[in-house]
Amino acid sequence: MRLSNKNNTPVITFVYTIVGIIFILGVIGYLMEISKFDVLGNKAWILLLIPVLLLIPLYVMGKPLFEYDSDGEALNFRNSHILYIFSKKNAKDEFPKYKLVKFNIINGFIFKRLYIYITSKKNRVIILKYDITYLTRKQIKDLKFSLNKVVKANLEIGHNDNTASD
Image (cartoon, rainbow, N blue to C red; front, side, top):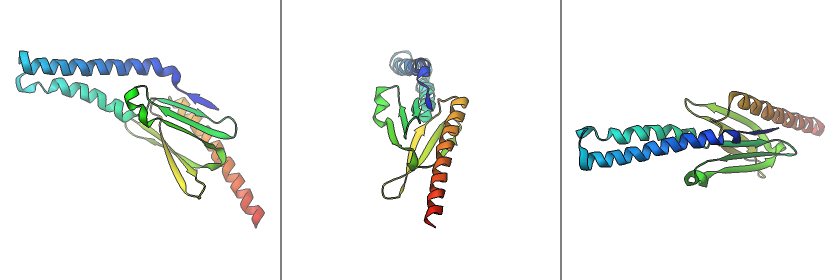
């Protein structure tokens, strides 16, 4: 199963552009206010507060682009950001399906996170984190269905291995 929200890229880019413009205009307005106009007096900080309050949710919501592919013998996850400034922490992971132990989806107030638990070569559990805030409910439902299918298959294989060794 393949899942991607790349078709939302123009909308997300538009929102980031508008908030960026509002931030730049707020900074310019603040500088003009303190140096030349002095209309707001001691309340000039409001011109900076409003744009920052718009930037905070965008930052908390995380990386807007998410791709998932479960076709074949491996699971592929890619989580990336539109802005080049934040692209350092882009996540791109590929691992065999049999390594998936479990997954968990956290629903915060303005964000959603996907936690993937996989086994390493030394039988330790590694946690991979992905931002899925920008996925629709249907996409999240499909993602849950696909990951549940892989986890159940892994449990059956693990159960069959345990009964064969007894």
